[in-house]
Amino acid sequence: MADINSIESRAEDSDAVKKCLNGDNFYFRVLEKKYKKLIASLIRRMIKDEEDVLDLTQETFIKAYNALDTFQEGYSFSSWIYRIASNNCIDFLRKKRFQTVSLDQPLFDSDDDVEDVTSRPDNNYLAEERREIINKAIEELPDSYKEIIKLRHEDDLDYTEIANELNMPIGTVKAHLFRARKLLLHSLKSKRHLFIDL
Image 1: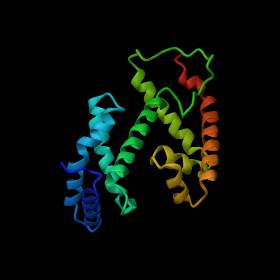
Image 2: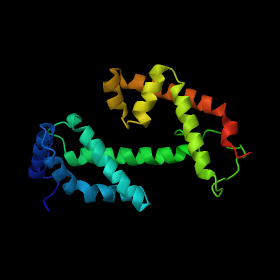
Image 3: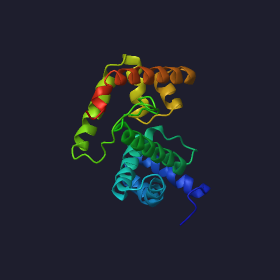
């Protein structure tokens, strides 16, 4: 197999993307076949469960297909799709942490006494209820903060992509995201009784 980072390989990838954007989806299947094992291997280094690996691999290619028009000719397709896969894994792990109510930082103070409920039979129900509470808290944020939280945590956009999407400086994006997370955590802390197994 040719080096995926060779000039010839990159040119083939770029040509395949152009043909996909012109409506010939066969060439996306060519790209998927070329990179599927490599993407699965990358994901497998971050995610242990093989079913999750397969799901995340498929999701990566779906996201790549939906975002093909953002691929910039002259760049490496392999690096581009690797970044999508990596962001997808990070988002997956973050959402799993949401089940214990975390948004990039602990929700409760370190001295809070929260019982371990991982072995309870109704744990799945509780996790789903918590996710619903978090989603509701996001919907209650001011529109500008709600949008930036969704772009970062649901759409997997990085700071530069969010800045381009919202037409604002990266510094402003970071500041708004910080304030949005702070508001969200404050809202969730006010409902902390719902996250403690009484």
